Every structure is written in C-alpha cells, then in structure tokens.
Length: 255
Image (cartoon, rainbow, N blue to C red; front, side, top):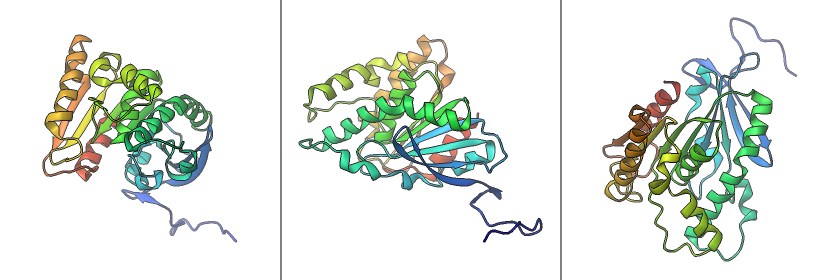
C-alpha cells in the first residue's frame, strides 16, 4: 500500500543530476515505447524521439539522454519497425541490408502518427530527433520530411547510402528518394549535429562522415545558415555513442 511521502525523505525515484524523473511504458500509434519525462505536475517543453540502431531495442537507450528531463523534455524511445517487441513483423526473404532498410522505411512512414499520439499526451511542443547508426538514417530522413522536427542529431551514421545488396524495388526507391548526399538541401536550415567516432570501422570517416558533412555544409551555406550544421568527430571512439558524444547531443538540443 502506498503511503504519503515524508518531505524530509521522499520516495526513491529515477534521478538525473539529483533531479527526479518518471519512466513509463506507452504504445503510441501502435508503436511500443518507453518514455522518460519530468515528474507529474511539471510541464513538458519538448519531445525528444531517440531511435536505436539495427538489431538493438528501445531499452538500450534508457537513461542515455535522461538529463534532458531536468530541462523539461519528454524522451520517447520507440522500438523501430521489425525490432524489439516488433520482430515478428519481419517479412520473409530479406537479406541483412534489406532488413535494415525495410525497418527504416517503415519507421519513417509511421513517425507522423507516433508524433500525433505523443503530442496528444504531452502537448504540441517542439520535436527533437536523435538517431544512432540505423537510427541516424531515420533521424536524417525525418528532419527532411516531418515539419515538426526542430533539431536533428545523427550519430555514428552515414548519408552516403550506397547499398548494392538492397534489391527490393520499394527499398531502392526509398534510398533514391531520401539519400542525404543528394537531398541535403531539404534538411537545411533545421539545426543538425552530425557526430562520428574516428575509430568507427562500420562507418569509416573518409567514406561516410566526410562526404556527408561536406554535402550538409554546402546545403546549409546555400540556405544562408552555415551555423546551423555541426559536424564533429571523436578520437578513439568506435561504432557506439560515447559519453562525450551524448553530452554534446544534450548541449546541442538545449542550445
């Protein structure tokens, strides 16, 4: 049985920097999500949707960006399509790269309804999108296609999208329609952080980060907002979201 809290020794709760926050499970427009948010009675000033990488789940991002709750953000952690609680939706016959891109395609398609459902609960507040690896593909695409997205952080990812093993026509069409290297101008001038590890063997800097950053810098310069794109690299960091990278994302979103 729950009892009223004593003010001198309140209930133990999840904390970030000494500030309490709440974790809840939601199904938003059919998408299983975990949500980290400010405690009851405190207003939400932004939604931060965080997309995980391939073969990962929403649980892996729990607590990573919780510092944002102290600034009033609700952090929505969805299972991307075909991942986590949604693995049974995987269609047969896909190779590994087609599986990744079918997940991206479906996750992008369902995002507007997910945002509708989230804003119905937490308010019509600005939307930030963060994505790592495969989630970075989603984040870059939503920055171009979803007008509610106010800031994008794309981590340990690529905008090159050279995928010779993807043969499914619908996925080839998705790649051609949304490849950042050729559509970077559609994201400008939305503030963008592109962050990569210098020791990332999955997305080597020369092959992925550098051409992607170059395309975005050119697009943002043409849009007359070169200051809205940041491209950063992290010495010694492989294919993972490092602590410094995470801290830079938090600072970027709150900037």
